[in-house]
Image 1: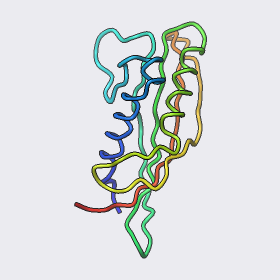
Image 2: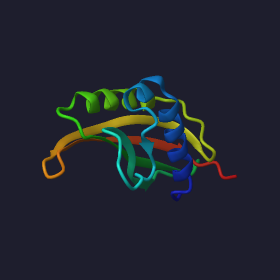
Image 3: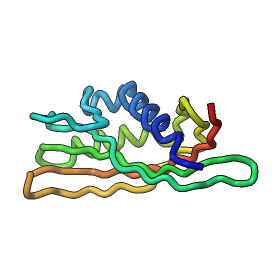
Length: 138
């Protein structure tokens, strides 16, 4: 197995977050694959790092995708960021995503790390998820 289904997973995650009412209520359309240059909203979501591990077996090719989504806030306190993080978890955990390549077996929440960047006065919550994909090649 390779990371061949990674783009399909990323696209499905992005589309799911962009279509979710609670996520868009929290961050609007500020969901980025690549954070744009210039001024940014006070609260936004950025798709982040991904690690792909082979999980093939004798019956099928597959991979485990460990990926991160960051919620970044230029606001006092964590309230807005935590609301957005909770909405993201609700939208993704056990979601039945349709992929353009492969079949999603599961999508689970792994962990969250909240921290304050005092140099830029930002709050950041990094959410980590695990997804298992069985690869069905085109």
